[in-house]
Image 1 (cartoon, rainbow over the protein chains, first blue to last red):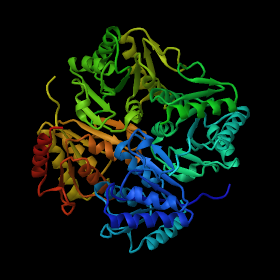
Image 2 (image 1 turned 45 degrees about the vertical axis):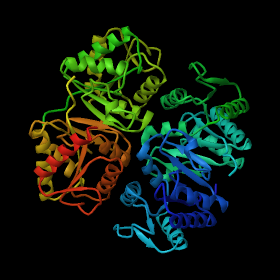
Image 3 (image 1 turned 30 degrees about the vertical axis):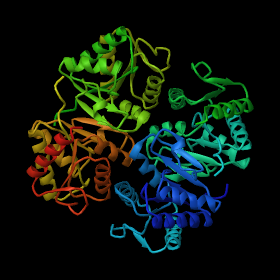
Image 4 (image 1 turned 135 degrees about the vertical axis):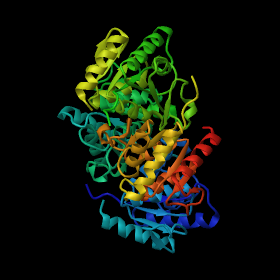
Length: 157
Length: 157
Length: 157
Length: 157
């Protein structure tokens, strides 16, 4: 078979303001345009906005859910993965990406960034988190996605 | 968005004989032809044969891996999900399907069937396991997939 | 430090009849008398009866819980382990024992037996499951615990 | 039964300098003297030093291991819990404590602090992490353990 599409994991708050949602949607859109698969935690806020951007651009979206029901996924998740593992699903979410893009969020997002860095997965920060040692800062969604694809291909996981 | 594709999880041995591989490949093919997404554990044997059948028929295949490396997935897995959770990934594998089709396997397969039954996920048995209370026996790959789609739609997860 | 106590995992239904509860309680009692640590899923039925037997005999009981709250543990669990991982906690439950004793139960118990067998953990069956290939049948709680300790020490995990 | 002992989870680097090891050992000692159960990730560095302190003071130590082998636990772990779930075991480690004490460490430690804060588990920082919003800073092992017990009893999980 031909090689697999690049998988980019997008993490961020399960609730977010309109500005962050707009950034997330553009991130999702760019991932889809670049031929990548968008992985997220499948719920609301940044996860939903990024999934929306990717789906509307014709992309494939995977949502790795913390609960036992596929229906908890937002409507833009094409493929829900049902873990019923609560916060432990954050680890799967991160490990499944060739790179991670982190948008604003709370402690859950921070734990995902820390897990990614520990695992050596390239992690791009957009709109927050640029003070965490090891993350790659970006200033626009387009730059964030470009950096994520570049690093994902380098790490060639 | 339009409704999601049906997800069918195929479980069975990580090594298998040619006859079982042929059954598994036809199962994967029928799932893809029916517009379903094939979910498996992503490794060899039944998982690889079913994924091969689905991919060659143009379908989407997800492999939920026990280890930390996406490259452990067989070449017919389009979307690897990296859990690094060993046997616990069997639970995710099962919960993520709207229905399960079980082919011959060993204890790992039995644990997946038991998990599916406990979770109320319709479970079709092909070529083995028909003695486990609660499974739905099928005699051909085509019948197994037809039953799986029917039950998946009824349970409307 | 001196060597660790043997850990025996007891699995079985989260509800059970009085006869099975009595068997489970005697199993727990014997494990404690033998200086073993009792591991269970921490909830009701067989888990509670076995934990009761062990605690009343002065033993240490660990309960590996599926939900997010330590208070879900039955009152005879001394050390609750909180997984919030649903059925995936069954895998931890089994892997943490040097041997497993299985009493009557449903699909959850079957999945634990299958997981133990797959992992090469000696598995003694009491009152049910003797038809599963690979389990070691016992006819009394005393025999079950004796066999479990013997095999646990042989496997010397 | 009487009420359960308080469980304090100690997190920190799997390697550490002598000064941090000394702090960790005193933390473990104080937990045991206070009648608490020490929970850790069961490996080296801070985990081993804290477990050593607790065991030498007569306490009970639990080690929640990332791999499939109980023998990976350091020698001061009395009760190894075998998860075979890699980094996801960090979540269990944290959720199983009534309070968390964080010593110096790397990204794994940060992910545990973030998980604790997200779950509302009181988190005391000793020797590092005092800049993370929400943690409770302490300046000595004795103060850290006193604060942890106080907050654990207040949260009365």
